[in-house]
Length: 318
Image (cartoon, rainbow, N blue to C red):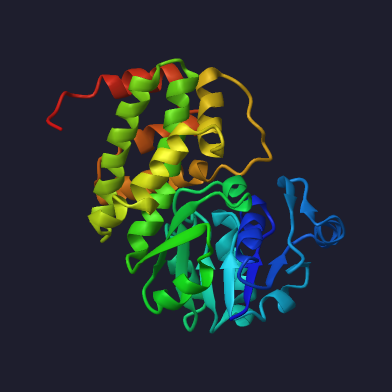
C-alpha cells in the first residue's frame, strides 16, 4: 500500500527516511519553496540537517497528490490538526490516517484520533507514538514505538515497521494518546527542576509523581494501566524527561534557569499543560504538577513560588 506523510518537519522527514526502506514514500511540505529546495538538495537542512533523503522519497507541495496514498501519516503540530482536518476532510475520507502528534487539542479537549474520527468518520484512525527522537529514527538507530488503532492494526503495523523501527500495537488509543501528550507536561517540569539546580534526585521524584498524575487522569478517561506502563507512557516519559534532545525538557530548563528559549521551536507541552489543567479541574482530578506547569508557562507564578507550593503540599501515603 502507498504511504504519504503530511508535514515535512523533523519528525515527518525522519519517518519518510525510515519508511523509504520499505518502498516509495511521498512527503508533503506546506511551503512550495521548501519542497523545491528539499527536492533539489535531497536534505531538510533546516529541520534535520546532515540526513540525506533517499531517492524513493518524493517531496511535494501538492496536497491532492499526497492524499492519493492509501495510508496517510499526519506529522503536524497538534494544535494545527483540527483545522487541517476540517479543511481537507474530503481528500482524507476513507484512508488509513495515522496521527504522529502528541498533545490535546485546546479547542475541543480531544486527542488526535478523536479529531480524525470527527472530521473523517469513514477513515481508519490510528496514532503512532512512543519514545522517539527524529534524529535517531533518521539515522537508523533502533527505535520501538506504539501503534494504537481500534481495528486492522496488524495491517498498519506491518506496513509501518522497518528493520530499525519496531512497532507494538494496541487498541487502547486513549491510553496511547494521553501517555504521549502528558509526558510532555512532566518533561517541562523536569527541565525546570534541572534548570533551577535542584538536582537529579528531585527530577526522579518529579517524574515518579508526574507518572502517578498521568495514570490518575488516564484511568478516569478509560485508558488501560498496561498502556501507560508501556512505550507510549512510561517509555516516552523517561526519554523526554532525561534528554536535552527533547524540546519540552529544554524549554523547561530555560524556564528554570531564567533563560530565553527559541520562540520558533514547537513545544507541545505548553498547550497540553493548559488543556489538561482545565480537564483535571472539570473532572475533579488532582494534578498538581500539570496545574503548576500551566501556571508557570502562563507566567502566573514564579519558579521559586512553584517549588515552594509543590514541596509544601500535605504529607500523604504513596
